[in-house]
Length: 376
Image (tube, rainbow, N blue to C red; front, side, top):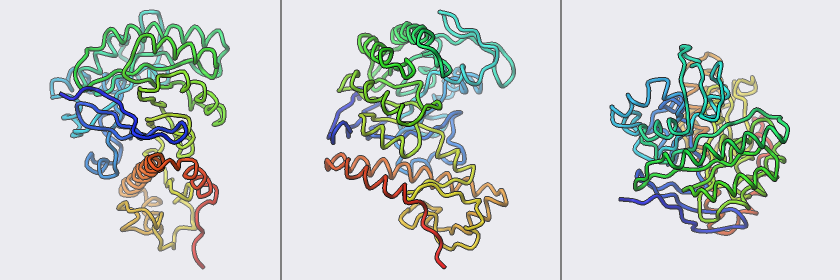
């Protein structure tokens, strides 16, 4: 059996090119994970997601425990079989969704009692229950259960929350069932407070995880503050373990975080944008609702090889989006995921050639240049 393993192949500054080995295959890093919250990447078939270059998906404990339930998914062969995805899967612990979606939640040292946003039923989610749900889902990468406090918050509130998350992390680690090709990640918390982030990273390292995530960022703070937080957080984490920045982000966020030593990312942005007429491209964002595109025969991005760009014009995309046809969401989501995976591939190549600084400079020039205007 394949052991869960991470190896670094190349460095360029603090940027790392690596590989995560799991029971369901290898993930080349830096990697972007499309979000398949409820067992599906919205508007995409699994084989379409794979065709973009994606090697790992994210699933969600909170949503899947409520519907269709982890027990049902386990009885049907696990999440890989259930959703027809034979590559690696990472599941988040449900902690963030409990804090952001659930009604009437009560947090205690034991865990969280909450009411479902779907049907109003009550549920208890503890570190042990979260880890067991992720085992039933057959997740390759399990996330420890943590509290995600709302920001802004004062130092004492963040400290108390972080310290409870560390106690929950220890319980999560003990509840994790060791098996070949499967790992569990700890989650660094502490808001944007340097002392708390460093303390959290040290305590998680002492517990010992297969990888380490940075949680509680990209929640409204300025990008520069997020980057400052990453600077000292990644320096406090083991060099030989993968690092995952949760819920991030924009292409610019990703490039800046790779520069600071992050290996893995997830975000709903490319799929959500695909359903709201926003195309991501090497020349920045393009709003295809805008009337300027209604007679434009060009593709979204002439250098892109996705089905939307190979086969359809901006004029057609504008039309189907304005007409609210499903194909608009399908094609634009495909394009955005393809762009994100091409970005990650270009990042990996730049690191391999020790040219990440040059890549970052060129990336910023193109993004800041804006979309190319129509001819005529």
